[in-house]
Length: 411
Image 1 (cartoon, rainbow, N blue to C red):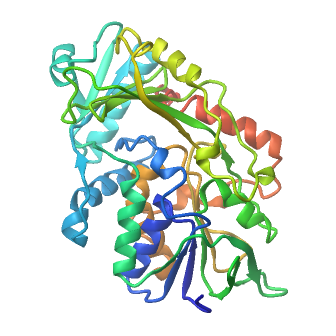
Image 2: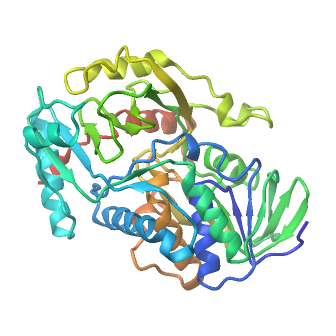
């Protein structure tokens, strides 16, 4: 067991692995990446593996665009294989609010240099023969959006971090944060295998984020929320060269996967999970899942994706992404705890933005600023004395409206 490090990253999911790699790439020679289980074994591999570059805020769009660029260049940069499918994505609007959102996203994306344009029904059915434009009033397509097998992201970034000299410690939960008396400055972490002295600690522990911080009296306002998806048996005509499709008002996405179609979405009454009462042995694979929710979501889009309500399945799965009250990430230094940083609140989109988010936070840690500002994601936008019940209620609302925010209000 190592005794000292220049930085300790807690959690080897997509966020933590990307950060560890970028810290080492930028010259920090002694980084340790800790995980209570195996790297990339919890929520990250249960994600959908989708990207969507256009986002509500310009800086978030820039991060998402940078992430796609980094994923496309990853193998060239590291010599580590990464398989992806840059087949584009489509967004469908079935009501006037959705039309306003589609129009706004096209304008906003083009202003930032993103290739995004309106899509006609005939082109949709040519690109994705399993999709229909019935009931759809407007659509856009972003040809450079991509999808990939989600487990790859934490795996390849962990491998790349090891190449750069990062020490990876699986099966090593952090049991306490160590702080200097009086100042609150971070001095290290206590793990199940002993202490590690370090001046920089990053909490990227996913569903366990709050537990890691609260043991040291630090509150981070996130709530783990179950998110589910299903994958059908192989279907005729489905290929990886076909795009991701999203339906705004239904909060549903569909993409090719393993010869069939993957469907997932954001239910209106999601299941929050309180991790403080969980067994130390609890893993995300133990999460109870509900196929009925997924079949219900399929029913909401039966006109656009016929047959998914009853299609035979290869598998269905669920993860525990962390939600925030406003649907934005929490990234950056934590006030009152010098040397402590949060990298959390993935809001069911962390895997796709992890490459750039890890890079930008590494810049902040090492230089005090980043090429793409992270100010939007500062934890101090929330009151430190938040009420737990109010937090969960706000996180449920943010989850249930993940696709269908009021973009018309943005003009």
